[in-house]
Image (cartoon, rainbow, N blue to C red; front, side, top):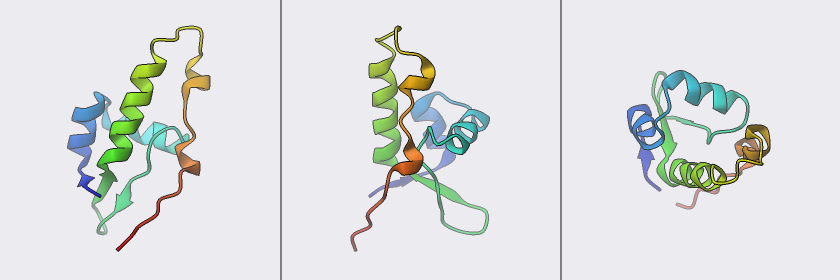
Length: 81
C-alpha cells in the first residue's frame, strides 16, 4: 500500500485542497490517514480508483452528480502486516 501526499492527490484528481476536504466531509472521497500531528496521506490506489470511477460516470450525463458519488465513508480498509 503506497501512501501519497495532498499535492500528489491534487495532481492525480485535478481537485483543489478545498474540494478534496469538502468531498471527504460529505463521504464522497477516500479518507486520509493521519501520519503525524500535522501530516496526512491518502492510499494511492483508493484515489486512483476514485478518479477512474469519476471518469467512467462522466460518460453518463443522465446520472446526477449526487447519484454518481460513491459513499467512501462506508469503505473499510484492511491493513495486512
